[in-house]
Length: 399
Image (tube, rainbow, N blue to C red; front, top):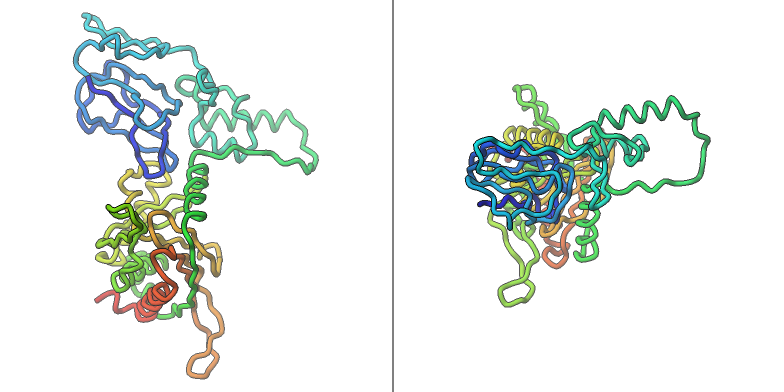
């Protein structure tokens, strides 16, 4: 009898929620087949079966949250031993009888009676937050009484039509953090107090890089400014490998520095409820076009919840860009265990002095945040000098 347990699907995950079961009790399951969707602090991900057989019991119903390692189902070929059956109401195991006994679900319930947690999809929770809807007042029409997006929208529409326009008030409303927002809060709190940050900013002339980008687009390959920056940042890490490192503890229990031979760059992607950072592996070895295609694919799957856990872990360096919002300069927080993070501002046209003449130039500010235990200010400056050289002479990135 094989146990299906709540897996660790991200490095910050401590618990997970069963979004929905894609297999029913009594269904045959093959190795590698998707049996459920798991909602983590980062995204909704698919759960593959490591065993083949019959799904004999679903221990944790959809909508319930449990810690990593807890048993959520059993897969096997024989009769489930009675001692392995936890006291979970409304679920009947498959038994060795001539007729398959189909489990009878309980009456729909909006709340988990054990935890008091409202059973709602991630999208429904986000829309409820945006519309100011109290999910405890919404009747769920999804499986097991789970609240879905349409339930929230219908409730909000009824509430709007039956409630007079509110008068302005100074009272504030506390909105509970989502799972993703809690994870971001926890990760940033662990990083900022525990990691001594230093920030080094440099202005980069982007005329040549923007011209190269236009030529690549004209050739039929769509790339963004950030794609060019990712390539340059990865190559700069190859030249200044001290930045591609992590603070760690050695075998003797003493502080140590881990030097990473591979260059894996994570790129921050904004989501409705926070952000996620998929990883472009071996970014220094890939063309700008390949990097661009990978980032678009990763970002799309991150937003629709189909990204794989392995595509979110293992980064050695991170890039965050707020240029599309018109932000000129900012500092980003390092994500442990990385030792550096690059914050990229907008490319803007400004008067610049070149050859003692005032002309219009395209410039971009970048700020490198580093863990001062691993990277000193001088090394950070050397890295930015190399990044500047690459972006101001971008043809070298194509050779």
